[in-house]
Amino acid sequence: MELIRGIHNLRAQHRGCVATIGNFDGVHLGHQQILQQVREIAARLRQPTTVMVFEPQPREFFAGEQAPPRLNRFREKVERLTEYGAERIVCLQFTSRLRQLTAEAFIQQVLVDGLAVRHLVVGDDFRFGCDRAGDFHLLEKMGPKYGFSVEHTNTCLLDGERVSSTRVRATLDAANLADAARLLGRPYKIAGRVVHGRKLGRTLGVPTANLLLGDRKPALNGVFCVMVKMPNGLSRPGIANIGLRPTVDGLLPALETHLPGFDGNLYGKRLEVFFLARIRNEQKFDGLDALKAQIAADITRCIHFFQQQDPQWQPGEVWLRSGVPPLLAAAPI
Image (cartoon, rainbow, N blue to C red; front, side, top):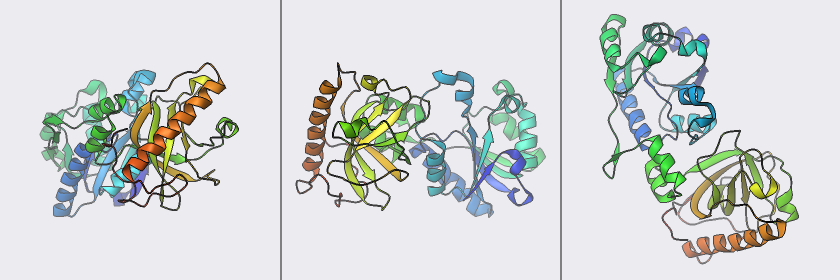
């Protein structure tokens, strides 16, 4: 896979492709179906499979803090797109200058002069250019002039409803992790490198591996049973708090994960945290003693959850049952 940042980094060898354009937030089943569609056409035309995305996402540019939470960060998105066959990912910085491009100019400068697109796959509701003036019909009209064809994406339905990033967010907001996993084709996860925190968990006897989430509201909030893919590729059951940590005056969203029975140094290591079941909402406690008591109760529930799945598992052990990570999202807690 080749990641190309900006139109100015497109070179002669990047000309000619079958492309699709979108946010691809979450890379859910609908996105996976689009990528399969693009791959099949690209193989037939003997062209590379190219995916164009934007940073920030257009809705984030316009709505700022009011924009919906992201389902995954940029690195995770790139990894997932690559997993489903993207050979080139073109990331355009969404700026005022790009926003002011007319639809015709976008076609000329980006699709034709930049990529020399042979075939384009987009939704029939796809809009682009200044004031969203460009649409599928404009692409159909201008395609013959510039030597490219266009077709709309196939709608992906699950339980009779369209699969979308909005629908995934709704399931996560409701902590319906089983449905979220079905829409995504895998348990919802957050990945990142472990950073130094305030060490409060360690003083409470519950050390945590902390992942920073930037300054945007996460798609999940609360305390969860999780499965953590470790740097060595093995998985360990854990318990995680995601949110603002109101009892200790958290200012930025963070993901704090405790691995019962684990004793090791994870600073600087990359972890993948898969969310399987919610224990409770995040809440503010009267003090650290109340917080400590609740954490102990949460850990007990978490251990019980995993021992329901495998009575032989004990805290501190890796998880050896049914793959990495197991799809346990439908299990009761």
